Length: 168
Picture (cartoon, rainbow, N blue to C red):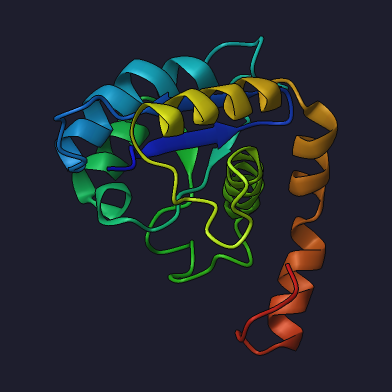
């Protein structure tokens, strides 16, 4: 069975976590293992961000990210984020992190000869290939800057498409 993973990036660096086998990917796991142990320290490290306290955490609206307890944890940690009242639901065209997932999926799939089903990698091969791809992306600052700087164009495209699908 394919393993789940989480990625976050800034203009300087990619951070990633592969879910431990047997762990449930629920709000508690997300807050403890992802946010508290990885994301918050990552965003508070000047090696990873342009300016500590200036990064804005964007999520993909998964239930564990929308939970009030998650938003309270981010607030208490001093992490700026777009909460449920700001970040529009079902907004993959606006979220630059969605494109990191596409890039990872494309590279992972091409490693195994499957371009049409890039996530059809299972077991140990999936994890090994996923780690290789994630490690190769960790310091791709040009890619991260391009994705972050594309936000105004993304917003314009979504507005022009009246919320429908765009080419982003």
